[in-house]
Image (cartoon, rainbow, N blue to C red):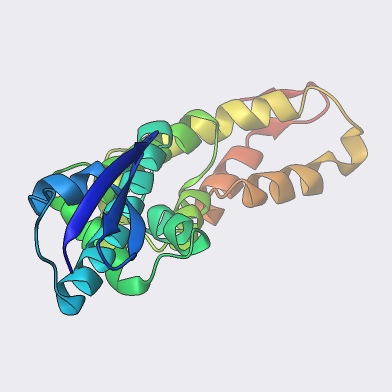
Length: 205
């Protein structure tokens, strides 16, 4: 078949062939394959063009998504699955973005670790968030290396001090431990901090 006409429709182009075949594609497909009026295309080549166009379509979606969202490999994978991309296209897109340094799980989780630490969450909460997003143990550990035991201890102290300023004193010792545990601090830090609380005075010494 011969490419008879190319019509532009907003961001898409319609390729029209002499046998009546037509399909919409992105500009990248036309440029990368040098598609000009009069070019002969076989059935096999047309099928390959359609596959390439699927890739360009989802790659374009991926770029739009990561430009608006702090993104991990897993987040992008799930987004593209929701958009009905197949696994082969998703893997190719993720590898391309990683090679171009546009997708980096270490940078992403460094940011997430800093965010949760600043909002007074402990080590185990941060680890659980990494696991939920299929972040590797190596990346999680690398991010946590930037926060010392003392940092987590001081963070727990600040949170506990804020917590004890209100509420029923009689129930507070148990509730405080439970609260700090839910925030992901380790047992040693929790026992250390709660052992220094004077509930009557609502102070930590």
